Length: 273
Image (tube, rainbow, N blue to C red):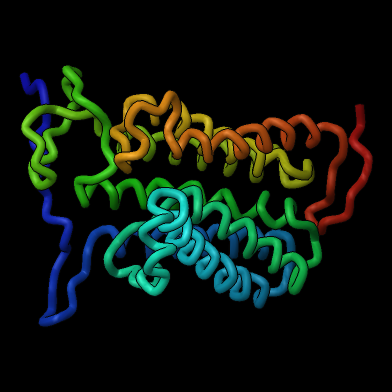
């Protein structure tokens, strides 16, 4: 019986001359495509213009990528990148932060609401984040393929020895833990929208997404290795600090969602009590 798993997967899927395709980039792209398909299905169900999906796709992809890059640079190593701001553009060197991506998506979604749909900021997020849950799961799969962002030592039988990162003892595969909560959050939000008509409760789906994503992230961070040296000795690390506002927002959205309802077309109405 195995007491650990030796993980030595090549992060590069294939190469053609100077073109190198890595699992991480492919999984990012797959997550974006999945989100596009799910959001397109929802908008079609609600009879919204097809062009909305195309524009939302452009807004959110730019917001997610730019936000994730800036988040990594400014949250985790600001002194280095503020001294060399041009290196923030070197996205091919790696370094993306999920909290920065989340902030980027929020900003781009607000811009989509103001410039295109005018249905409400939270209304858009209630529909968008269903697919985003799967994108987050796929990104963590990419981290697993890169042998990065894992936890501390463990004696559990599913511990991973990340050979490519120089490890010689089993570690918590926290990428898989985060993949699981991404799948669960997707299942709950998808079920709520299609089976419980939760799109009529403004903020309910988005609130559950925030709790499912950031509260679980907060807990998992206790067993995850620090990403940067400055986090050593901190009672709660940077990932947890950045998660707290999202958790509080999620709780407030869920509470307030029971006070009013909106139609799938964005018109607010009273909720029967």
